[in-house]
Image 1 (cartoon, rainbow, N blue to C red):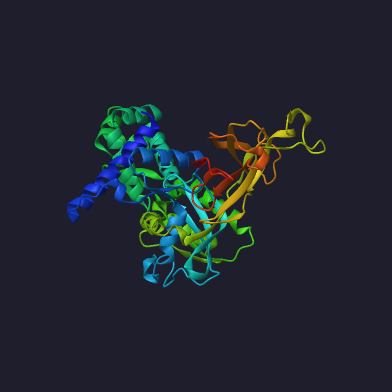
Image 2: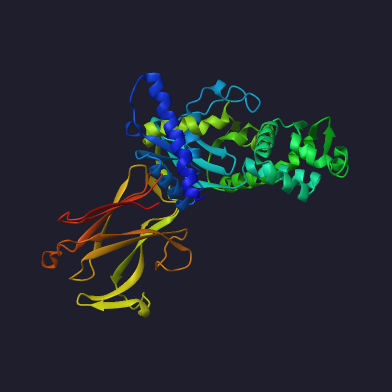
Length: 451
């Protein structure tokens, strides 16, 4: 099936279930339009992935939608937790201070991604992002994948592939059981499903499969995994998290806390590793229910998006424009001439620069001049890059995000200077929106979500 269909119907089910529950408990007739829906996404996701989720939510009927970044949501929740809201094994009687100037890292350790953000508490308790979202794809599912590879090593590729093909539901239960026990951190036992045991015993005694695999053994219907073997499944994930955190700590920051959230943060192996690696540099905190921190923080964010007052721009954003041709700067092949003079086409006009601070509700105005006297439309193309000062939109490392055309139903009055167009960009939110208007007559209005 198409991925958009799968995601749309999943979100539609959640929406319908929520409405049914609310109406049954409050004797109401609420509809989707009565609510603001908050959809969380990893901050490190590409813009196209975030837009995909917005499209799925809109098709599911969540029209009044707010996109929340998962580590930000978790940060908002953890910031207001009391000291007894954190796990005692990691730290005792500690809380995340809200004094202005307090800086801390939030590592959202989920199933798919490790999503890291850095915040500073400002006056009034609002947050400022100090480092653009970073991380990797070394979440808890990577550990599960290593466990599955171990099972293939035990039972052979052919037998395991047959089991996956014939008994997918039983396989899902096996993986779920593993996701629970992997959080323990000591020797664990996992019940071996009936059909996997039956397939294996058709070929040889079940004990024989475990003779040549270190760290695992058969124990009366269960697969026993030693603590050392279990830790080996975590090695790549732990290394990836450590590397990402160390990259952040190279910056000139005053980090006082590291907060671990997400379902993967329930793992004692992960928490103990982070405490060992960074415990002497700052306090390591983990809420009592780390897998719920994103969910509960998303509710707070939906009620007050201004709580994250400032963010770092993840890219340099710009639009493609014509500028007056300068032979000392521009490529002659890009020269375009008309009745209004010589122009250079395809130039990159910077709107905001990578790592620049932008306020959550900040709108910036940019003025553009029409190129031709008889121009009937204006095309605004939006681009992004990790470079700071590109010259042209088709240079290396530049990606086109989106574009829109603004029609001009009435000819601009060039003689009166009405050939100016204003582009308004809102950068500081979790999404970027653009609005184009006739700078004087307000003849046209077009709004687009760039991401």
